[in-house]
Length: 304
Image 1 (tube, rainbow, N blue to C red):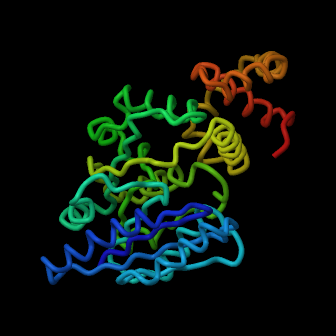
Image 2: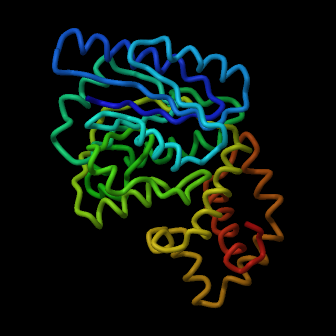
């Protein structure tokens, strides 16, 4: 059995669930050995329209809804979905994904025995959503640089893990789990990759893609970025050793340049933010902002 596990918070993903359910029903009709369940984990959503929409999920074949009374965070909700699931294989999908192929589930099913972990692909909308220029530009640069390709990810399998679209053998996931210190945006996939490498589990990267519909606004993406950097600093090792951003900050510290960098960062911080929140954000300034934010945290000049 494949358990399709989808964490959600204040997002109506009924179209995604219906598309997955349709593929699963068709596959089950053509292959008696195929079995599935779809479990949606609502991490205490507050948007009433989303809550109402998600309540309809339980009416679909082999679908059920887990509703948390308190928000437990990005990693913990995934671990909770694992605990209540029954499948031999666990397919985690982010709620802001969209199905773009007719054989998405079938491909995972056919490839299920090829590796301990199978990591699918992510593709972005062809048109830039208004007000979301920073995230869209960031994602497209990675795409154009080939960092989303199967060959690039296969060359560095543990570093390119993504929780957006990924399947685990049950016993593999159960032996590691997501690190529940990751309550906000980012780094649960990095920590999972580190653990998988330590344990010697195999990863297969494929081009079985989902479309990322959740290209968030400039302000939301910047807020998430800051939350991720705070998590990086708070969790510490082994994250810091695996972060290019942290390694750059530590070099500045060794060269006794961190104080100077922080001074200029604080001096120009508002100007940089204005650019990043505008219609034409600079990715170079985005890198400067992230480095400055982390340096300020390390120097105790920013609050966690």
